[in-house]
Image (cartoon, rainbow, N blue to C red; front, side):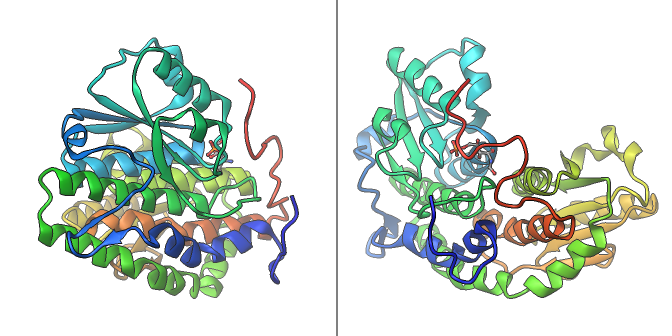
Length: 364
Ligand code: AGP
């Protein structure tokens, strides 16, 4: 495919900078201010059915799986339905118990990923209800799903997914809000989340305006052979996605760990040659995250924090605008897309087509 590059040198850069518009698109026409909820036309789920959902299981691969991890947390937080995400490829091979009261959600940018499609087909064969959260309209996974939410990120050409990840997390926020408002989420909380959603495009622009600074940081860290990414609860899937982004496009080895697990092993790795990227949202876990930064500093580890305020223990902080706690994960990974991009650029990598990877993996 070939689209207008609009002055960008790579599709990755172009797609990172399309995110404010893309988020605007996924929100457009869906917000219902009168009832502080959202309309999702493709959902086909009446209130009684929505209330009968006892569990949500989200399936996807790679970046879509990571978006699913964030989605599961949003659904559990806002709709109070137990929810989790699992790699679609693993799910299919472990002969999972398929439960009629569970809502299964397949996540995919391309809608053609074989591992996800096969999981959907296996689920449907066993009588499960399967929704799709898909970007490409009319794709195989969209067609196989009973209903779903389109992500409306627009065409994504770079093998490394950026804008679709962000839009998928927003689509999950909409779904969580919708399910929440049918269940126990109050009007006031619905309103609070809607206000937060509306702030996203301008806040994304604010983050992208820091590109020059992030480029400098990327050049500082580009000599690292390996990097550690940490986060807690809402920050952890952000850390996982940021770590995948860096690996894919720069070929620097990276690991993601829950900050709470550091002392159970990975702390042994910490030394000046292994920088840590820490996701530090200003939420109820702020103090705990700060304590983790102290532990790393005490072992002479270099720290780059992504936070809502300057972090004293960090060598560098990228400050991102604060949204509602539940929506913060949507924004916190965006500067790290730019970090991965500029690291790859500094190392002369083939940014739009990293070695060994394909945009959609349509084989086993
Ligand atoms: C994203 O940067 C990756 N290239 C990859 O992990 C991708 O997200 C995965 O293969 C799933 O693709 P899909 O969303 O098209 O199903």
